[in-house]
Image (cartoon, rainbow over all chains, first blue to last red):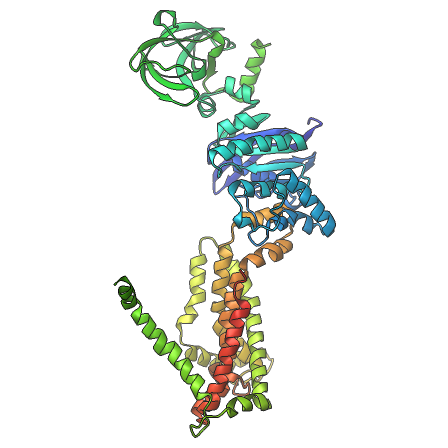
Length: 362
Length: 265
């Protein structure tokens, strides 16, 4: 176990009513980092959070906090705080008392309570609203109260259960920056739960992609985006063109009937694979200069780019992002570099994937 | 025209309230200022406040109502809480709470006479256990017990409704912030169920002030409350004026209690 490890999960299984919610989950979280648990709804990500917070008991497996096993420790004894999806502010208490709640339980002096609360309210920019009823607050303000209520207790770790999902797009972006800033300033470990891949990529130091109760891949946002392990991850994180292909030999792959140079290796000769090409890596060019020829079907103006849907001769669909529009129905070439091609094996597990990458990457 | 339509639709309700709420209260009010011979007088009120019997009765009623309400509350709260925990069968359990309300009060009261009397079920049981026979009927305790039994659903239902309305993540949040179960109960759950507690208290305390049937049948008229006094004046002594005066005083007491327990928002 690394020295800076704050939380460790070892072989966690959760089975509820014969349904396996979590399958053998193991990971370590280091102090002071921003982690994200990314997965679709029902993937089990909230259950992981509940196991760490202490609201759910794992059927088997161990939870460690600062090296101590905490399976039996009730939530109120854990130095971990949770930001709930619906914020769970106490409607019977005003803003000040909501934030002071944890301190009052510790029987702190009134002067200390008001000092610490006003300090934390400064931090989340809510000072002056102390006497407000929490029901009068806007979504963004409630969010900040929930954060302040936890931070005032100086937790070692904060668990955030989709805290931005109830906010409108603009506020969401703003809160993403605020949360990330807050986390870096305070140096607290954050475990952030979301189904929004953009949010995950923008905020995290490290992402766990989870589906059906299993961690499919974990890594930095760049790793996960550039080198997704399988179809699900490639599809869930960002937009992708996923095409069936064959790995001819190391660094050579065949798809759409053509052979291309690529940057992947370590697979069997002529192994069937899937190939990922991100829409933003595809450049539109003249037919004779392109590596592939496609016919434009439709395009949507997205503000900062055009999203073009085109089909090749084999009827594969291609999603292309371009800063310039093209004509509907036009036949164009598309170009890409060898390193834009990412090859995925079928059924490869994360460990095998990492080991294979080790063999040919420097 | 729209106004007239509105009036037509509402008319039956106005008529109802006029005939069955305002008129009777008005009549009670008028009667309370008349003596036995139908002459205007203030003596009824003077009597009430000068005569220690009436003040004692009022005090008695108040004490019994407080005891009955308090016992109902501490019995009903855990019941409501436990029922709310049964996710799947709680509707059925609530039905079990409601069911006795469909049985006439008089029948239920007679059933208790059967249980409590000298040769009743309870005494038979005690005798068989070798504990001897005891006087249960016509005691204060029996009176309070039956009054609580009878009115318990009125306390359980509003509390149950406020318990199931609590967002469970609030309870988790309270634990999360370091509160124990007891602290969570007093700081979060009780404040959030306070509206239910208040309606339960109103629904029990006010009728308990003027109970008379249970007082007579189970309390054996040893327990004299304002309710029994009213009944006596209307049916036995035919002193409608005095009966009405007590009625008016009860109405004022009820209004005061409503004001005291209303939502402070």
